[in-house]
Amino acid sequence: MELGVLFKLLMLFVWFCIVALSARKFFQGRASVNWPTTVASVSSSEILEKNDGNGLTFYSPIIKYQYFVNDAVYQGATFTFMGTFGVTRYHAEKYIPMYPSGSKFNVYYNPKSPNISVIIPGVHWGQYLSVAVITLVFFGLARIVEILSLF
Image (cartoon, rainbow, N blue to C red; front, side, top):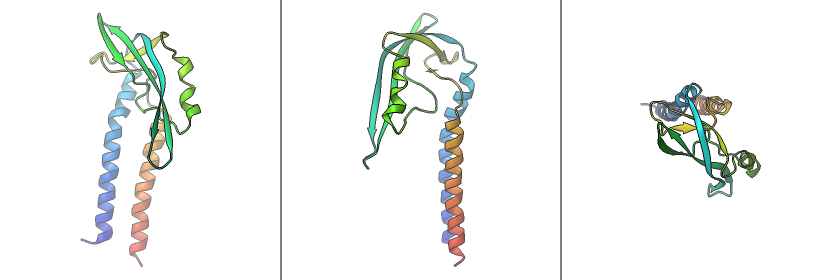
């Protein structure tokens, strides 16, 4: 088989795997809009820093909370199903004052699995954008390989 065709098949496989892994969070996000809510209490609110090893630091608000469903206590820390890592500390810091330790808010929980909860339900524009960008990059690379194989 030609090298260009093998590369395109590999790119298609990798793209499919990335999209398949994103699909679970996408469908959870869509379903969470219709989930019931219960009152949650914030146990801690902090910012997590992650260094990528290349000098870039990512920040994420970590809001840990507990809530009760049918007399059982559950712990949660899911802010959105998309994730909350931002490039700047400012992005992460804007959520901390909204959920200080000890505060109460409504959390959405999965009625079939009450241990699954989320603070902000739904599918967010970032999820659509990330799939679109990944698709453009992978299919763009495949097209570039095709063009280069003409020479």
